[in-house]
Length: 275
Image 1 (cartoon, rainbow, N blue to C red):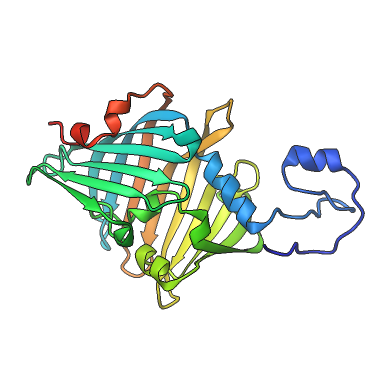
Image 2 (cartoon, rainbow, N blue to C red):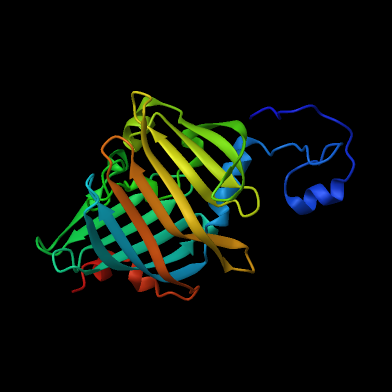
């Protein structure tokens, strides 16, 4: 667990601190104690979970010269096992060369994720094992691992500082794999994550390669409250820039609908392979 930074002073308002979700408010003005780093990450993972959702998404990819390519897709999600597993399916609609391609993901809180990809040209479904989650998501700068929630127990967490990102105050946390196998599977030696104090959404992430050099940077924007009851938020725009080759990929959620009754049949290999 991380140690709280700053000089500890007398508590002046425990009630206000609880309301702000920032632990104990310390004496003076706005000096406060940040929650433990692992707790910050845990709250961030919970803040993105929706009981069920359906969305229209556009993926825009550009090479180092800025030449764009667009792909349109639909996405559906649903929580299972009391929220411990999020199932997600993505179906590509356009352009013609990727139409019908599908990805089915079972994102588990405390177990390796299950991922299947259907390639219509081959009429074949291929499974992505957990040790391959560093693979590119259909040619984008996002990996399969980037698009799923990490298992908390596979990493260690250090609180770094507090700093603005995306126009709002954030906690900054370093996330490191506990062992080499996890690092190799993720493709990163470390991630530095900026998490909103207000919504616990990820506003920025820096990804460092296995040699310790900055590889990619993610920035999010247009954060919206999708489920007011659970206070669950989603960033409608996610932009990933590869700092080593200049390529960029952006996910734009053009429409997100809260849909807790999303059909269970969507999250099956049979549905994945439907024409």
